[in-house]
Image (cartoon, rainbow, N blue to C red; front, side):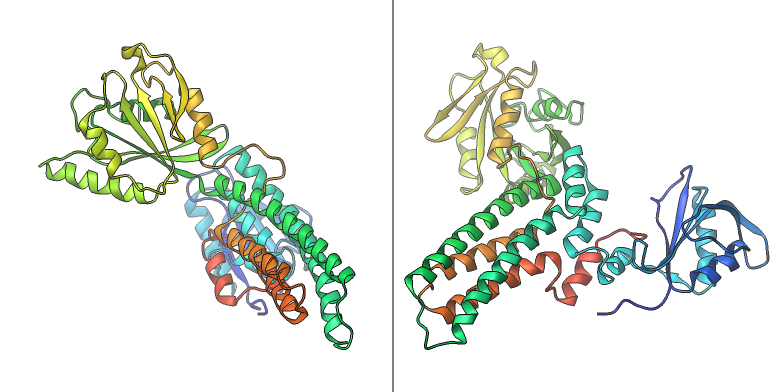
Amino acid sequence: MAPKPDNIAAIATAPGRGGIGVVRVSGSGLLHFAALLTGRQLTPRFATFTPFFAADGAILDKGIALYFPSPHSYTGEEVLELQGHGGPAVLQSVLQRCLELGARLAQPGEFTQRAFLNDKMDLAQAESVADLIDATTEQAARSAMRSLQGEFSAAINSVVAQLIELRMHVEATLDFPEEEIGDTDRQLCAGKLSFLLREVARIEELATLGSILREGAQVVLVGAPNAGKSSLLNRLAGEEVALVSEIPGTTRDAIRQALQVRGVPLHLVDTAGLRQTDDAVEKMGIARTQLALSRADVVLVLLDESHQRAEPQDNAILAQLPAKVPRLYLHNKIDLSGHASGAEMRNGEAHLYLSAKTGAGIEALQEKLLETIGWHQETGIFMARERHLEALSAAGHRLIEASQQLGHPELLAEELRHAQRALNSITGEFTADDLLGEIFSRFCIGK
């Protein structure tokens, strides 16, 4: 799939007012293009302060023009960057002039797509560009930068190189069918397969943590009306994002709040209390609660510890929770019951005692919450997407199948080929064009 020969242009800075705005152009013949726009010949890789002229000679803006010759640019093509004032009207006028000079408006992600197609970066690195832009925490930004610098790709390529070496050894035996595979060869293959499995598992673990940083975990708060869900949401968010009232049923709809716990993004959903009601609006809120539960990574079940025993409505709520979703039982209002803060295990499930009002036990809740979603601090985390995890899982599965075919070189070679194919899809060595379109269409315009 060759890059398109035409010139593309777009505003590369975020919408809205700003001190500086950038219009980016990529393609070919941009020195002449720039001369028509600025009235002068630009020196490659040299910042030139210049007016930007309209077709009639009027000055649209004044700013800095930068010309990057091919292939030493972001896209691998000629690139022109026009850095001017950040007003929307000014940027639109400069962009319109670029379109008048023959460029067309870039599609979302087209600059980065051209960088990929021109071998300036592999597919995993290209995806990390968008992940770096979208990062909501410092840890997520660092992981995305590691992937952008090629650490994720290097780890994948290292496994692929060793996999190719093993494939060469196995397929060489197929060229000489009269030679039987001896015990020494089987042991050699088994050892290499064991090593590759460990490496893929290690990368998958780091990628899974990166996926948590990228996507964030869905955490749903459920409990009887007036159990303190909104108070807990406010406590975890560090601000008053939900109304708190003694009147049951105050929360009529799911309230969503993005927050960080030790650098890990979480999407916390405070739901309408699950109870029988004739209120039409509250019924709609309860229906949305059920939808949120079906998508949850972990459910926080809030119980009113100030009551001496479980309320019947608590049991009714528990009966409605998805069986496969992990849950933490939070005994709230220990400031009224006098119970000490802390955690205990009952039948393999965690029960935490806390007070959303005073903050007692909140730190223990944060630790347990991160543990439940599978987070642990690790060095070298790679920013990863669902397709990366699926590819790593598929490769691991194929390597396991290969280890069971040591006595059948034809089947062994086929499993190894599929494992390599799965890993190559991560970096784009093997990737269908329709998948490329789906990936880059989610980028912002100008990137």
